[in-house]
Length: 208
Image (cartoon, rainbow, N blue to C red; front, side):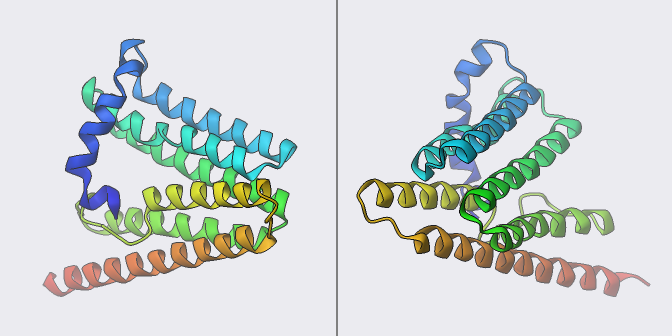
């Protein structure tokens, strides 16, 4: 929702932030790959040190590449369909790695599966619609899209880590927050499915 409604304001900020990457000659696909590697390394180290605070901060840094690859593509005039596809696939693997790490460390496999399903179905609902009818990529400002999901999971992990550092650790912070994430992600998937179904019904009605 944030990215969809405020794209014209946010994109120039990311494009300025991408200047150092452009200065060293990185391509959009290299930025995407770098982000995927950083997320994977953050997940692997989380399994080892099990610090929610460190994990949340590392992910916040790693996830910036999720926006910077598009900014690099726009500024270097290197936007391609193949690059967009690669970015989307990398996003799904990033989410899978994060939820697998949380599921392993906190033993929250059921919630992790539901959380991943919500994000995956949110993405697939639009992609599958595009196979049936032409759609506008930016006309889907749903409630809990990828930008919101990234911010939520990083804030949740940092909050859990700070509570632990202050001696107020509670398993319900991570468990409850992660369950809320899964609920919101799947509610957004249903919101998007409902919109897609309405669009497809209107398209069917126009056919002779």
